[in-house]
Image 1: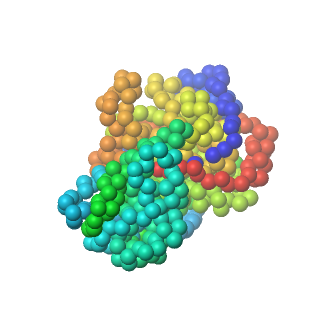
Image 2: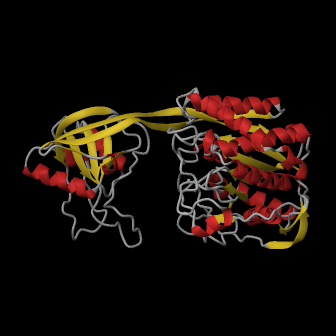
Length: 525
């Protein structure tokens, strides 16, 4: 789930005692004893918030997706807990494009040769409209067969003139290529189409972009506004339908049931004013509070949100005094493309230079977990493709996590800075970042199973983005181990005398960030 100037990480240096265990330290970070806070952050304390989020989801259709009552109730809960703990809580509201498919789509050929298409043979495009349509199919400026044609050259539906002679009320059969799906859909709707079917091209895009363009299109119309159904399908199905339209009339039944509209959601921001700390070196500890529409999101990302919330409460309860100001952020609309964290960073203005670092905690309790640490020095995942340059300081944050776990006798694996979570907008503007992750839809390797236990060849979280991501999907062993790492790194950064850079380096880094232009994320979750 976004960019970049290349930076060099700092290696491990020296040996020191970390919270009662011997472990190597990241350069420029002095020893901080975090045991008191780690002892205060208990699994039961975190589960108290997880159960509250599950209760909220149960009362709101099984989801806490941004723009829904379930998210609003989640944000209210977090705000109430933080205010009771003595935090100064503010909110940022922002609009975002909301889309949900509320019932399975139907796609079938009525005549000739009736055939219902299976669910895996087509897909509703994001931001499609809703309707139940039975009408004639009309192919528009398609290229079939594609043999000998360069990829991505079809202009089907890209020009309004393509629809000259189109019969109002028909279903438009279009081909992928050249222009955005939204442009094709808008032109079809303007011509009176009752629905749109877009089929893929028949060959990979190019040797350097080897996407298989014969598979079913999983497309997006980018924003709400299209009122007719729009689906994607494969080249094979599209080519068959084109051949049939050339031979005679083809009737299609197509039905989609969606919600596609602009909604409002919010970030919840809590400042630990009572603890003091240098506000020109504010550490933003963030996690996304929203789930996907399909489920309650108790691991993704109730686990990160609940851990951050409980840590904030315990810091206040213990009356701890950080050297650097602490800000806890609970982001909205991460699942729609990191929109909450992006909104926050884009609206920092001159305060951008006051953000010392971002720690991001997204999925900390995956059932088949690995202790993943973001690759802050780009050593395991070199920059390229979706992997982003790690700003100076990110390498020290990675080393801080690794050193803590190593000292506790716990292995870690690196995970790429690929912009899939809310650290993306921060590193895009040069703010050092890091964090922990216990795995999502990826498959555990045999080597990881040998190190961490669990089942090789199975997803880290088989309930990722599904209705079963409930309170029973939480691995409490992972939650305890990762929670200790969250506390140690957070409080070490907050309390360290030397910090990531030393004073001169920090001032230079902050000044440089004030002059940067926000580039925004490259990819989304």
